[in-house]
Image 1 (cartoon, rainbow, N blue to C red):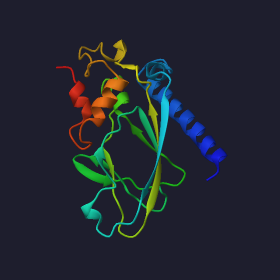
Image 2: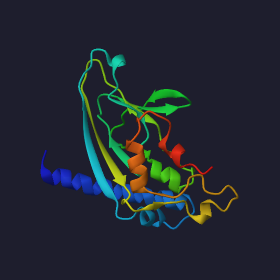
Image 3: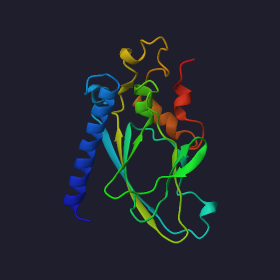
Image 4: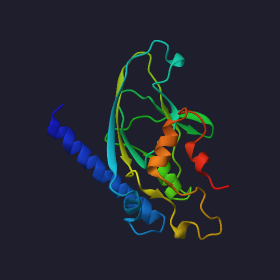
Length: 192
């Protein structure tokens, strides 16, 4: 793969993520730069995942069920082999690939920032009996000292903040100190 192509892809996906964050801010009745401003100078991490064929896919997961600890994930799926599943109404449902489309996952930070109006999605990757597949995930991550707290406009309805204030670094450390498929990590940050 050509370095210029990868560099261009990274930049364009990052800009797409920022535009989605603006739209989320506006959908919450906030200034369009609110989410970007709270998250600060966001890091971008990428993971290229390769899942080889597995003759007994029921015995393994490509990746166990989890939510993403970051703000936003942009996923480019393999166009020929499905493998992503989301948890809907207590059941795992396949997310079939669509040509020229990304899968956008809301991360835990946006769930907390939106005071629960947006939900981070439980998802997992499964293997296929006959075919290998690849995916490319791009993660937009707040800077470590970003204080994750919902704006007053989302807590003035009498319900208050669902989650206590925390920094991204605090959350990220807690997230990785537990098993991925345990209860939602945000449950540990809920206001009592």
